[in-house]
Length: 263
Image (cartoon, rainbow, N blue to C red; front, side):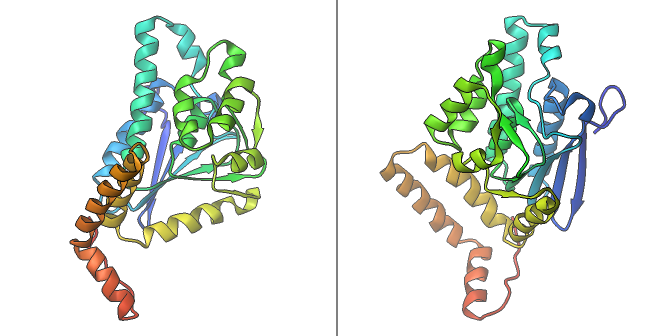
């Protein structure tokens, strides 16, 4: 995925049904430029149709995960039209991540800040080293992190989200775990193994089941209780008509490994 300056700003590696996407702007602290956002969007769109990919790992090169939006780019043209287009582009990426048929795991090895924190929170799972830091520091620059708040408030409680938004401080991995932003905190030398434990487990499941279940989960979150149960009942009934569901139950009853057909 070459950038205009002949650098590869987003790396992709595939192995055993696991696709790793790595932000590769270490000299810019993996800032979310319009170009990098476009590369991520293109990658997710391409992977969505790739039946060989069962799970995605999102990582970053260099000392931090991502510093958020590229502030130099923002100040280069701060017109309403340009800034609106940038935040709309980023918002579309976050929405598409929730609609992505494959689960996405964030591998957080350093600071995840502002839109970088939003990117991490938009992943389905997140594993972090114990030295990582998290922040949405827009208030310190006079720009409230309203769009990152959408992802954060759907992962953490409203009060914890507001604590991050109003303070703008760096929070620890322990805080992020307590807030509900990440699933697991490990030592740096344990990060890859912890991420792969999640990824390998997901990759062993039916891709059809995952592609039906993940969007259903996010859709029902915004529904009233009765509507949510009606919707998920319909989805589960449809899921049961698929080969993989019947094969999985038969394999369990027959005490053997299932043979998935996938989506």
